[in-house]
Amino acid sequence: MSNFKNKSTSESQREGNPQHDDFQTGLLAELRQESTRVAAFETLVRIYQEKLYGHLRRMTGNHPDADDALQNTLIKVWKNIETFRGDSALYSWLYRIAANEALDIIKKRKTGFGHVPAESAELTVPEKQRQVFDLKYFEEMKYDTIAEITGTSVGALKASYFHAVKKIEAFLMRGE
Image (cartoon, rainbow, N blue to C red; front, side, top):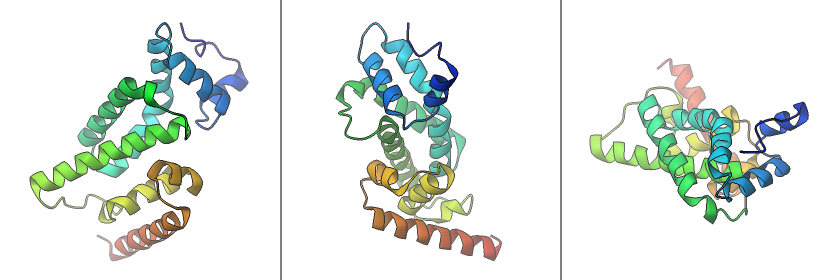
């Protein structure tokens, strides 16, 4: 049984903080042990599922695609947790897998059905800019963390965010 089930108040506050090193280290250790893997994975899902879904929903623009991307993400995490090297934070790794899954679904959707109509202001922004906007604005991540997730320089991220904001503002001003 996972050691993460019964926590004190300060520990449960850390649990919600995806950047807390002690929690991530302990969770990773339990994910890598056969006897605690299932319980630790349930903890990982409980903590990150909602955040990942929100990120995926904003990237894909609809529930079915976001749900598919989330399921694919969690399957990949389960199958590949042993290969996680720890070069980045666990949640950065999760967001990167999720973003790649969403981009795969978007590419398949575009090649399968031609042009996808814009469902919101955010969907009028190119995929890369939308991902940066989503992580910065909605997830309130710092540029350094977004750089880890996307493999992009901080300067390029700032430019992408700026352009995304301007395009969204222009879309909203037109009243589309």
